[in-house]
Image (cartoon, rainbow, N blue to C red):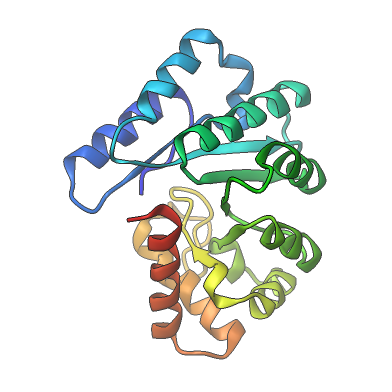
Length: 221
């Protein structure tokens, strides 16, 4: 699946998805770029969301760690994307960094139970995980779960229902052990699946089958 960042990467992701069977795209703007979204950009994003190879709105959300865009601007754009998800009946791909409470509050207020999606690259605690599950979201885990200092995150994934878990790479970032510090790539998702399997004490094949089913169900592919 091709993800979205700025406007040009949205267009590139869609072109890629249109070029290969079995490849899909999402359309959104990263919270880092929220300050750069005006009327023209929003109109182009709305048009891209109508394309049949687009299966989700995002990634969108809040990033209060870097704050490359003002918090209020991020929250306003996030709310607008939630509205777009309702209008298009597409799920959300949510970016959340240092903003658990605000993301949950906006989803609860704007989503009104009518949108779902996935919390991308989840790194929170079990209480945050339960809150997002209660809001109807899946939780996606990246190479971070393989890191030595991620014991708490592995405990979270052990306690979650398997039918609400997804796995990802976030390539080219967050390469899992044993490739940590190198350029990530989609093939490395196997190491994420292995870490989930080890944390839950189940077979790798069970994780692969379950997370594939979950992705198909969420994105309707």
